[in-house]
Each structure stands twice: as structure tokens, then as C-alpha cells.
Image (cartoon, rainbow, N blue to C red):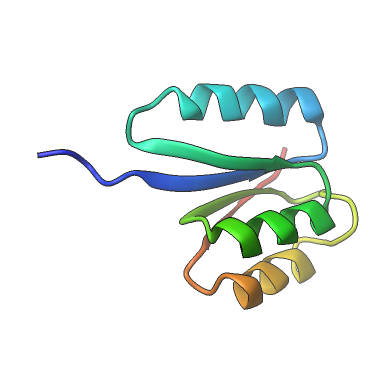
Length: 87
């Protein structure tokens, strides 16, 4: 029996980190990276277009904020779970 694939969007202002994390996560059979964003507007576009299961969200993402961006994503894709990443 195969596992369901979890669709992810990675959103982080540090390009190298976001791209590297996406490559690592996409290497797992049960994960599919649907897109990578580097600011809030890109994140909202990807969430609306792909309706991911999970959004890995940088707390310091430009153009939004740790409250506004998750709320906007929830409006565009109500089923998406948001995991806020902070360093």
C-alpha cells in the first residue's frame, strides 16, 4: 500500500536555504514540492494555484508578516496547513 503524497510549498527569503530545502524534501517519495517562493506575493500565488497540503513559511518573509501571510494563504487555500519557520 502506498502512502499519500503531501504537497508542499516552501517560502523563505533566503534563496539558497529555500532551494536547498526544496531539493531535500522533494527527494522523498511521499513529499512533492509544488513551488518555492521568496516573498509573500509569490507565496500567495503558489498557494492559490496549487492548494498545497503544507506551507513551510519563513516568519521574516518580505511583503507580508507572520500574521498577515498565513491569514491570506488560509483565505486562498483553506485546507493548507502553515508551519511557521523562525531562526
